[in-house]
Amino acid sequence: MKCKENEDNRCIIKNDMINECIEKMIESNGIILATTTYVANLTSAMKTLIERAAIVSGSGHTKGKDPLFKRKVGAAVVAVRRGGSIHAFDSINHFFMVTQMIVPGSSYWNMGIGLASGDVSLMRKDFRPCKPSARTWRGC
Image (tube, rainbow, N blue to C red; front, side, top):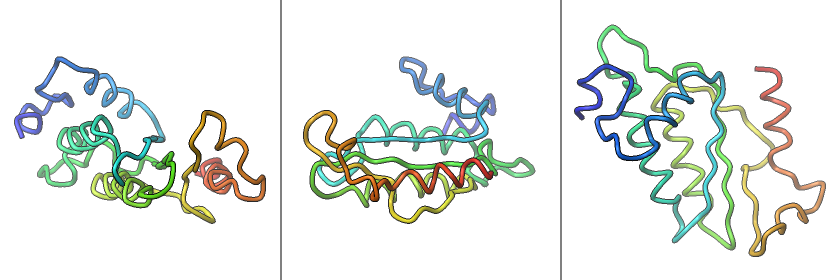
């Protein structure tokens, strides 16, 4: 919680790239977070980013100050071999919600299913879940 106390938009832990990521997130209008799925969950690196970014942003709990990511557009993209992608997808979307971001809808969840490199690009053209989200983004 020291990150929140500092009020400098930076995490107190400085020996990794999280502060650089948070800085880029603050500067952007929209944020796309993508993760692979391991053991029915997002990667530990993505979990670290969203937890620390949520604390730094204020997450709506800083008196008299809006969260840093409020009203930015956010989209989650998940890669998976078999199952577990919904939990990873939800975890990222929960980060977007708690930081008061806007999440555009789609006709399906933004996930790619495959084992080998390139498998996702072989998915049926009529089942490209990110396309509706991309069209929605253009309208934001």
